[in-house]
Image 1 (tube, rainbow, N blue to C red):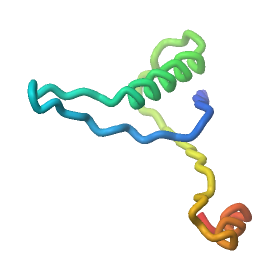
Image 2: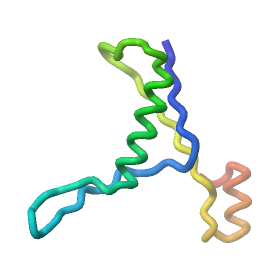
Image 3: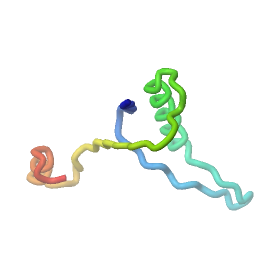
Image 4: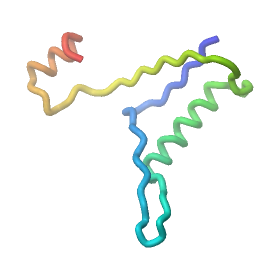
Length: 85
């Protein structure tokens, strides 16, 4: 069985926890919490009400990023042609 979870937009890394010096408490940045919630919803929709998976799993992830605008036009063209990762 294959389950595909797709989340439109740019991939986002998990933000590191932040600390409040006065209280010593930690918290997760709001944009990370928001992205995780969107991913959780996309996974829930993809599961279509099925029970959680059990046992060994194989996971393949594909993250697509735009070509860096800081690269030269020559390197951007090479990246779009697939010659440069």
